Image 1 (cartoon, rainbow, N blue to C red):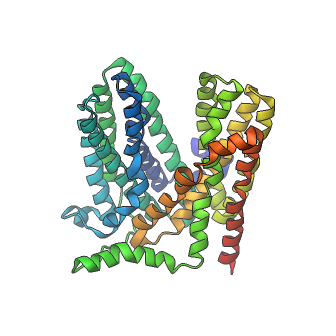
Image 2 (spheres, rainbow, N blue to C red):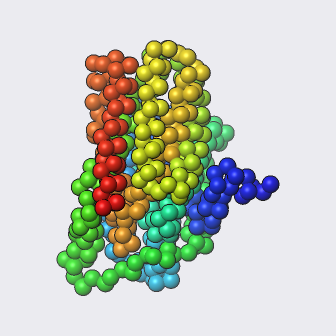
Image 3 (cartoon, helix red, strand yellow):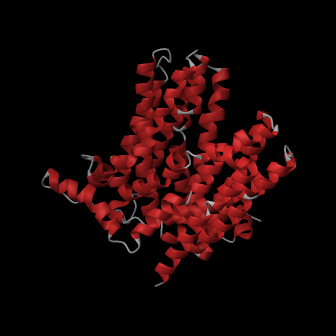
Length: 423
């Protein structure tokens, strides 16, 4: 039996996942995920080894700000043509090529930075994060515009697969490499991997549905076309307020639970080694498998039915942690919790990304998707800040029950949106 035949028998959709345009999204996911750890966990390790104090290391977390604010400059990617490049490569590929070139050089230059000169080191790291976030804007737009709506779930699964593999390489892989060679050589190696993205961009086609950039004859006209028009267009959509409420609430239960998950496991007596093995290794595998299943369900059932089904299932799997709190440090049950929770989360994420993608119009893809993805992070960055206090007040069992029930508002919104779509 061929690989395609085996895949088709497992999921019934081997042809969807093995299409060239879907495989291209996997490669783009890889180059999107590669820089992330280089300005986060890997960077923090480098700083610690260099003897930088903990307070300063903590301040370096602010380097991630461009990922949250990328919607502010996303209109540039929608409304500005790069001289010469756009004419020969198109809007999306020209921006992607430029940003990957800047990202490659910024990672290579960062390899020569001195962590004991914090200001310069932080500025160079911020440059990597900015170009990385900007690359994400264009990759998201390319993904949305390159595939029909029914393939967005499959593309989301492949994108996540590539993204997670890249994070392993620039995270655990980079830490291993830094033990064998210097940090400078490690970051230069990562820059070399990033350079492979340039070849991918040169070889892939421009999206067929990518709209042409309308020429603007004044600054005010450009602001109207590229900044105001994308938001005005979205607000003309039926049920746009309900859509935004759903986008903000969808990840609330996960974000609330996730903040206290590791402290919970440590309080039960699990070792950090056990947490790393079960949560990171098994959790990653389950997330990837769940993503492929979710992508398959989107094709078969559609986005809204898949979102509703996986949201309810995910809420139920989160409730297993109430039992875990009673059992204590039971490794087998924790494995069950982690695998089922991550698998259902992966299923839902594939459907959620597909849904966000379906909301974007070709003319404003970069701006609208950047806005929606930024709103989706509100639950993680803002609404979940009371998680610790809630755990103190309710105890672990009460906390996980409460966290699971936080999924109900988003489930209600899915039902409302399904009804509005059917009318």
